[in-house]
Image (cartoon, rainbow, N blue to C red; front, side, top):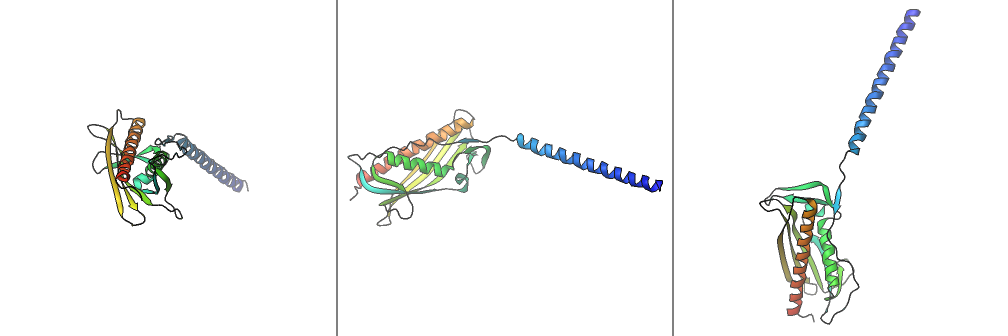
Length: 220
């Protein structure tokens, strides 16, 4: 009887030791998991300079038309929020923790809408949505919006815009823009600033080109 009891005690002790080992392993695993989470590097978010919305002021040379701004088409890279870099060739990469607050294609579309409205050159400017009537539809394609490494570090912005007459369905105006803005240092803040400058410059050129079109093709 005593022997049976000793065997039973030894078995209980072995079970207790095994349970303790499992508990210790679980605690260590949990500590490693939460320690790793705590050590994760926080993401930083950036955005372009979006002009403030101002009350429209009709000017003497306001073109009596309604412009509808369509989406900016682009590759999946610029429909996401991570900042893109490349070497000027075919190789591209993405920053892990430096991200845009809004995907680039959407930010540039917002800049275009605000600048077109704030210019006071057009009777009305809206995003193109179902149910909204307009005279001309403007849309674009974003080709490049990235850091380019090379002998000179630059920020490359390139896009193409076109405008279609909604009554005739004919494309009546196009404008292509491409610019490499020098970057002073290998610093994300500097790269973002250079990309922002490239966009602002491109939008200004685009607006000037659109003005020239309507100056030579008065709306009837």
